[in-house]
Image (tube, rainbow, N blue to C red; front, top):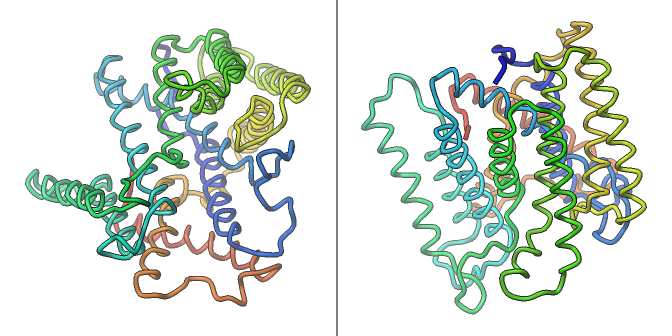
Length: 391
């Protein structure tokens, strides 16, 4: 594959950091009462979306933007495509496992049948995740690293052992969670990139094929057996298309194959806008169902927003403000799960993070904004201490 820039791409970092900051904000906002509808997730059958419904697809878009650079970094280390795919499978597996555990910590449990509270269960689970996947100081010995990873593995296995669902059931993939959905879409998109390379037209055709696959499987809704299971996972197809769209945008902006970047960006935004309009005539807009209309609208909005960031940062070189988003950009996984860790820690002692007076209306909105900024500041401090969670 042709060489991409080897340095970190500041515009992608800014877009990632801003998206993560908004994600933490809207996650906290979900617990606030008496807020406008445009600050909430739309119901599955609403045929509408808000900026809240754009946060998850924006993160999928950014995952795709990062893939070409991640692949090149592995190639520079001497990895062949098989080794790169193996590394990707390990990363995806980690995301799926964390997402699986997170989903079961939120619902589907029978706390009365468990030997510990769900808050303590969640806290041990998150510390096990940190032990398994956090970075370690360079001076640590192999024995120290093995001990830490073993402790994390034992912790997750122990939490799986003590988990109880209704009627003596076990942990279930009620859904894969945000991280799990990202993991599935990431590994599929990585495989597509390894096969197609930096050929934008081919990757675009593959992305549209996943939209077509969604439409095909949608017609099989209600089937039982293996087909029914596949249909239930149909939304993964539009998630993959979202990741591939970010990958394509990244190549348009940075691949040496593309000579007229401005024209390429404009064309990509215009085409996705037209496709989104056409999709809205066929499907309702629904994040919950991950309809093609929602996915293509998300691509259009994400591509448009990133085009602005690209112009400001990469073309006009206005970069002084970018440091605001550096903590979240450098450690997105940690800042995503940090609020859940704090919630579990507080719940273990019977405390709550948010006072009741800040759980409604304007006060709640302001609380959510301050909370998100505080999480970013806390992660910045953890970064300085060398605490990073990265798959």
